[in-house]
Image (cartoon, rainbow over all chains, first blue to last red; front, side):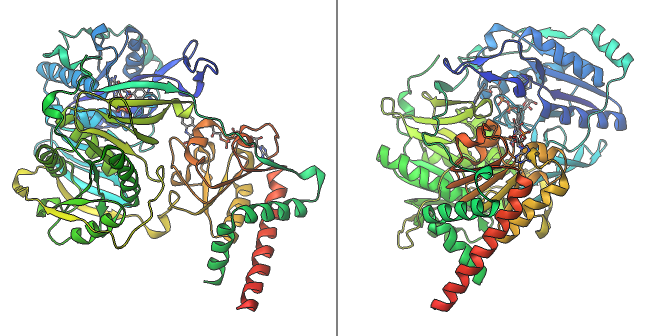
Length: 282
Length: 354
Ligand SMILES: Cc1cc2nc3c(=O)[nH]c(=O)nc-3n(C[C@H](O)[C@H](O)[C@H](O)COP(=O)(O)OP(=O)(O)OC[C@H]3O[C@@H](n4cnc5c(N)ncnc54)[C@H](O)[C@@H]3O)c2cc1C
Ligand SMILES: Cc1cc2nc3c(=O)[nH]c(=O)nc-3n(C[C@H](O)[C@H](O)[C@H](O)COP(=O)(O)OP(=O)(O)OC[C@H]3O[C@@H](n4cnc5c(N)ncnc54)[C@H](O)[C@@H]3O)c2cc1C
């Protein structure tokens, strides 16, 4: 079985700060990490490899530094790592990103046919959840999003049964390989990388593909040029102009503070009190 | 790059909402979107259309009547056996066909597991722009294009995105972000029945089963009117019981910040914020929550926000309406008791007056 896992390198968003005056992102000193959601996809792919044998290839589109994230994935157990990197990809929105990644998957498939493509549910920076469906449509793969469990894979019969999170329940779907799965978070626990695996990863050659090596057929479809969405404005949120009405516990009894709050709240929002009373009588 | 709308796309007119329904009811986000679509269409002088796709026995005409009440002028209705129960392939084909035939300029979908699955597929098939998780939708006065605003980097910044040279302009919006429009039961509209003509045999993916969430599991945080939420300031799972106690007295849902979910004190479905639920209750009581931007974006449109925090400088007080500075472990029992007695007294007074 040959599985391609798409991973994105993202800034560790817990550490991102916005410049209060210029409203620009202060990236300096913010470490880059593998998009946390993608690790659930990688782990699931590695489990399938453990069970059925085969290979896991990790694929990333990004700047040359994204090599580090791919190495990290190799230390967890991926067999091969490919970084699609070219200035021509800069400024890509999700339509252009999925075109570039789909082209690269096709190239990978020329070396060894691909049975499954995995992506994370979404990223923590762009956060659109659109790239997975985009790759699937471009490659004509069956699309399975928000997968919470892989129930069964029948390699001989070329079929797969999965559970996917839907509104108000879980759908059980059966489809044919090849397919694309976007894996839901917290559905598995990422394995640890062993010391030898880390050493191996450090020595691994990440293959770097420019746009030609990635098999891009139409340069009009990549980067800024291939992106229908235009960012027209970036701005900070409007602060609320009135501060909270503050009640200090030190200044009166807990009971008085509580009654005071209830009185102010219900005077300003009589509808809340009304609904609470209706519920009580019902 | 292209920013001029090509001549052949200028014919695209009207604002569409994909009306999401499953097992007998329409998702409320669809009505919320009709409210937004109405405003956009009025600015453009265009019509609002709902799209309803489903099985032969599903009450799509009845859903269409409801859609008219919420602001739709017409509904495209597609009945087909292959559209019973959501599957990506037939819905993508169906919606793509409708777009190509009837040519809307804007299409909105809920950012649900169904809406995102479908929107990403349809936008790729149509090769057009799609903006995710928008919090504001306007018409740009200069270009007449859809100006879709979405929070980025967890809400610390907002960006406005437009699709200038492609149609339709697509956007998804999370449940509860847009306010619910008023229903006018007497409003009516046109139904346009459309045949798609799919063969089940041509569709690869089969829906084997649907396992509904156990009812005890149905945490309807997004649509709760009152939410009592606890954060890491509650210190441990035992103290978190105080949140439940207040919630019980108010008939409220319990919410939480992300660290509380990560610590396993409550289920993941209770997380409020960027990576949890967006909520829009009438009353949100935040206890021991600092008010980080990722939490704020999920709850700041509550009508009334009460914050209880022992740090007078906690960021939550910058956007709460009422603040109690004190130890949640002692404030909560007192507040719970005060609500209980106030409501008891008032309902007795009400009963006596009646
Ligand atoms: C703040 C911000 C807002 C944006 N808003 C929009 C928008 O509304 N519409 C739009 O079209 N574009 C938008 N973009 C651009 C978009 O983020 C980029 O196109 C990005 O390359 C991919 O989208 P994503 O990060 O949303 O990925 P998602 O679609 O959320 O990613 C899903 C999965 O796809 C895979 N994946 C994604 N990117 C890569 C990659 N480079 N390499 C390998 N695998 C990958 C990962 O497995 C990931 O888990 C936005 C970008 C930013 C920074
Ligand atoms: C990518 C990303 C996504 C995220 N998504 C979310 C999300 O969806 N939702 C979310 O909530 N967070 C999210 N976060 C985390 C967010 O940044 C904050 O870390 C989190 O909201 C803080 O939770 P908290 O307020 O409960 O805890 P803390 O920040 O630890 O705050 C605890 C508060 O309790 C107060 N306190 C302490 N003791 C008492 C007491 N005895 N009585 C009263 N008050 C007390 C303290 O003064 C403090 O203000 C996300 C972060 C990242 C990086």
